[in-house]
Image 1 (cartoon, rainbow, N blue to C red):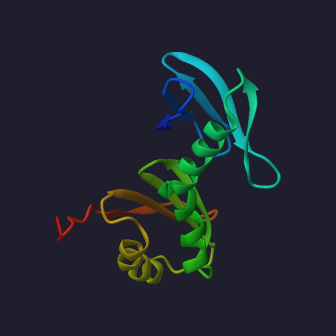
Image 2 (cartoon, helix red, strand yellow):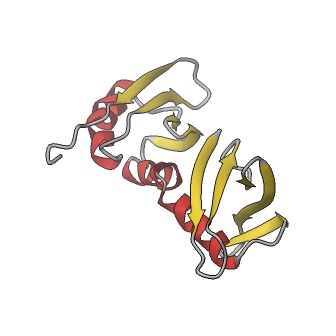
Length: 156
């Protein structure tokens, strides 16, 4: 499950704090205010965000929630991994905010991919986040894990 917090600031209404929740990457996002579900948002066919159920929320709030979601590492890192290693990676599945499953092509050499992926993921992913990647091959049993440790900011 992934949870995000979004604060909508409106000059005419009181500021509203929302909690965004998603069980898996194919589900739309539940929007909560306090303990009440106030709506559900999802991408439309034009890749913009829309409210698909619930109480009317301000369009600017829905747009802001979508922008917050798009900025998150789990939204862009799977595409980047597939783009970086297309000859090795068939699919990247987000299991949680800090856990990913990397499914390699059946004929991928696991040792060769591990040699490239382990140092490469440190350059692609955010420095301040620790991530766990479960790497397996399509239709082949067994897997190994690559842990990208959090890197301290040397300028702090």
